[in-house]
Each structure stands twice: as C-alpha cells, then as structure tokens.
Image 1 (cartoon, each protein chain N blue to C red):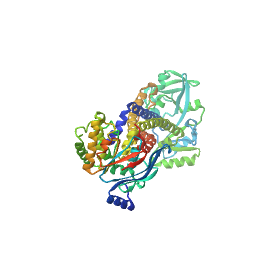
Image 2 (spheres, rainbow over the protein chains, first blue to last red; image 1 turned 180 degrees about the vertical axis):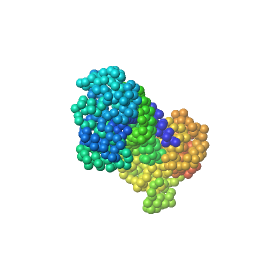
Image 3 (cartoon, rainbow over the protein chains, first blue to last red; image 1 turned 180 degrees about the horizontal axis):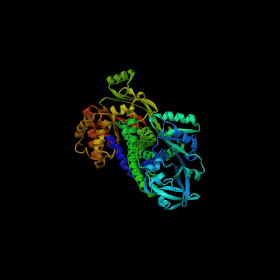
Image 4 (cartoon, rainbow over the protein chains, first blue to last red; image 1 turned 45 degrees about the horizontal axis):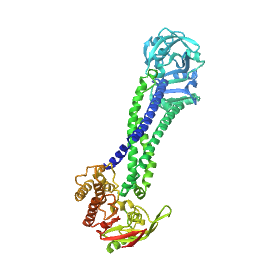
Length: 369
Length: 238
C-alpha cells in the first residue's frame, strides 16, 4: 500500500507533468488505434469486394496490383466448367474518372455476380443490368457525387453512360463505384479477360485440390482463399506495415515523453530515493517504484487513448465523405496489443531513470540539502 | 539476508565475546580526488550497549566517520567492522541497512508527503516485515516516544521536535542494535534539543542499543557513557 502511496504521491506532486505524459501516451495510442483500425477496415472492405461471398479468388501470379492482373477469358470459362466449381464470376476492375472525380472504381461483372444480386436496389432492379447498351448501375454514393439518378446520363471517361439502376451496399468502395457489364468493361478498358475470377466450390474440402488444379492447368495464375489472399497480397502488407509504423512512431514519441517525465521525476527526488535506500530499500524495490510510476502513466494513457481513439473512429464514420469507408470494428486483440505496446513503452521509458535511481549514492544525496 | 561465510561467523562470535560491535581501523577518507582529506587514520572501537558521543567542530570528520560505519560510504583506506564483519566483505548491504543499523540525521530526512505512520513503516516494509507486527511495533514505539496521537499526521503538520522524534522512531522500527545519530539535535531549539537527547539516551539504554552520536554540544555529550573527541580528521581523546 505504501509502495502505491509513494508512486501516486510522486505523480501527484507534478500533476501537469504527469498529465502531459499521460496525454502523450493517450494520443499515441489513439493514433495507432485509429490508423490501424481504419486501414484494417479498408483492407477488409477491399477483400470483400474481391471475394464478394466467394471462397477463392484466381488472379495473375506475381502481379503487384490486382488492377494489373489479367485472367484470360478462356481460363475463366475452363475453370467454370470444372466439376468441383459451383460458381465462377470473372470480374474486371478498372479506374475511371469523371468531372471533379478523378478516381472512381469500375466493376465489370456478369449479371450473376453477387455484388449486384445481394445489394439493396434503390432505383431500378437487377433484371435491367446488361439489357441496355451503355447502361451502368451506380453505387448510392457514386450517384450522389455524380449527381445522377435512374435514367440520367453520366459522363465517365471518354463516354457517356445511361444509369439503369442505383444500389446500396455496405462496402464503401462498391457504394462509390460504377458497375457495368463485363463486356462493356473489357471494351472500355481495352482488355480481353478479367482481373480476377471469384470462385465458389460445391464442397469446401476441395479447396486444396482446386488450388493444385489451377497451378497445374494455368502456371501464370494462382488461386488463393480469402484469408490467404489478405495475408499475402503485397498492397495489404504495405498498408498494414505502414499503419503499424505510423502508430509505432507515435508510441515511440509517447515513450520519450514518459522517459522525460521519469528522468525528471528521479532528478527531483534524489534525496527521497536516498532516504529510502538508507531505510533498507533494495535496488530492486527502488526500481519497482520507478517502473510502477511509468506503468501507471502508460496504462492510464493507454485507457484514455482507447477512449479517444474509439470516439475518433465513430466521429470519422459520421463524416459523409467517409461513409462506408470506415469500418469501426474494434478487435479485442488489437486493443490488447495497443495497451501492451503502451505498457512496454512505459517500461522502456523507465529503464534509464530506474538505472540512474539505483546508482544514486545515498551519502552524497543526503550530504547536501 | 546477507550470506555469511564461516570465517565471518567466527569473527562475529569473537567480536561478540569481546563485546566490540564497531571497530574502525585506520580509516582514511578524502574528497575531490584527494584535495580534501577528512579522515586521517581514524581508529575507534565501540562496545555493545555503550552510548558514545563523537564530539568536535564542524568539518572534523564526525559525519564521514558515521557514514563509513553505517556502510553508506567506503573508506579510501582502512577497514570497518560491524558486529565483527568487515563491511568490505559484505555482499548484501541492503540487509545490513535493514537489520543492523538505524540512522538519525540532523535534518530528519522524512518524506514530507507521507504521514508519520507511513514514514515510520518504511524500514519495516523494505524488510518485508509482517504488516500487523510492524504496526504493533510502531504503536509501542510511538507510545514511548509520545507520538501515539500523531500517527495519521503528515510530516508538514509536525513540529521540528516531533519530526526528529519520528525519525528516531523510524530508526528503531527494525530493532537494529546499533543506532548512528548525526547531530540529531542540531536543527532544534535548546528545549527540544534537550528533550530529544534525553529520549535518545533513554531509548538506547532501555533497549540496550549501542549509540554512536555525532554532536558538537558538549553539555549533551557529557551525558553519554563515553566521549570521543575528533579534530582535523583524527581522534584526539577517548
């Protein structure tokens, strides 16, 4: 109890300094939580638009970006004919532009594609998809920023397209995208195949056999399960690494703040540490007090950071421009990792101060008032 | 706890049989890389249960001698034996500080944000003493010292005399048999000074402690069993 009193008393003596340190950790944790959660959400959404309920995705081997992948139409047809395959949907991804909107994701899909079948149609219906030449279906957000509605004509790229439907999905990328038939997309982007083929199997136990067959039949293609794809796709890896690096830098700065606080804390009570030493406190007990202080700062900062980060994420979700792009799913594992990192940062910040504290020579500290 | 070797145990037994609990043997100590020599070959022995006043003018080396005997500093030359064991050979000075010596300083050296009770319990907590036993010990000491009604008070609320009595109480918490007091009355007025000194002697004699006290107040020193005179880093008269 007196240990805790010694720790809290010292933190209370320099309230402003303590609050600044806690705030440093809190904002670092909040930044890390926000960045990682937003990016994980974005990656989840991107994975979602690739798979769209399918179990596997087939694409060109060793491409740096799926927009550059090309699966030949013949390969897609052959795969669709394999007995183990229940459904194979070729999808062509492209980027189109419109006035004031340089980047709009375009999906070239078949009428059987789950994206438009599972979406909520606000205007028009799925039966109209592909029936009208130059007809496109817009996501709800895309319809909003293109100021388009059912029956209107929208300029996209070099052409003008008729809006045959507006649909709502839970995915921000799809909600801000344009859907056209696969043939129209091939013509528009001057491609002959598709970017990917999403696969649903009759029997999930055939996944390994399917991947082997893709490998044997089409050496230039690769088949991966959704989770496997998310883990291995280089763009996702870069995004995840960036998120953790940004968060880590924030936390490192917070850690420096804790280190600074703890160093000042030790320097301003050298005499007190000497008193404890003369009264029989061991080096380990003295270090425990210093580490205790930094741990409390780190834990309180981490908890405050979780609260700030959560509020920030919900705040981002409320911004109309980000609607559908921010997936506020706080994973307990992520929260645990963030708190653990904050705690480790706090402990690291106390390493030098505690080493300094145990080296204080009581006789010198007590000699001078 | 410190680990004693068989030779240390035999030396301790031998010291105990001769009654010498403190032996400083030809101690030299200088500061500022030898610019100031504070102790110049000090040799002194103290018998168990003795109350010894270490007298002399400021700067004569009294405090330095106490620090060396208390294990807070190391001599440049010479050796210090406490309870028959050479402090140089001790592996665990923490155990020595916890169980064998108690300190009282001129400036009480209490932690101002803690209460009297919390300050006094510090040595017991450091030593891992059972909480209930520690509180009982404190209650008894506080009653003897006249602080039983002040246990919950913060140090800032106590008078100078009360603070020094608190420091005395803290020094006695772990039942150390040797009490080292460095000008314990130096910061007090005459009345409080006399009261604290009387209390110190009463407790030391009542509990059979060995008291080695640095003071420049000769009238107080005269009440001790023995007076050791120090001047210019040397013992002049015993």
